[in-house]
Length: 129
Image (cartoon, rainbow, N blue to C red):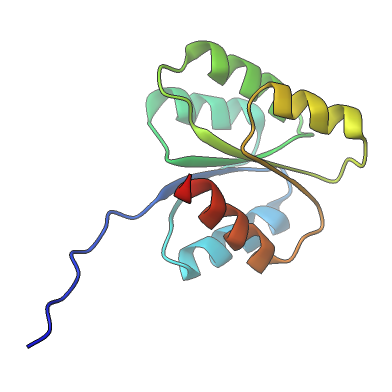
């Protein structure tokens, strides 16, 4: 008789992106890979959700209306007792932005467009640390 592994709690991911198509593509890919997903359509909504609830991981777009990913990240780093793991995604090509994101403690930095399997691999790497 083989024993069944105990089911692990799903990793809860907060997706924050103002592009509805990208947000939906990421949501579908993550849910298909067994992640629990909550979405936010701008930085202000994402920050409000992150302040009310603890997430295992946040996937955060850099350039958004109302509140940029940088402002969300800066605020989270000031408020958090236990830092949330963060993957920042952006279409921005500049290395200066990447360096600043790394100073703020992002775990990974992906440039758009990226294949969804690259995002899933990035999540696995970040969550295994």
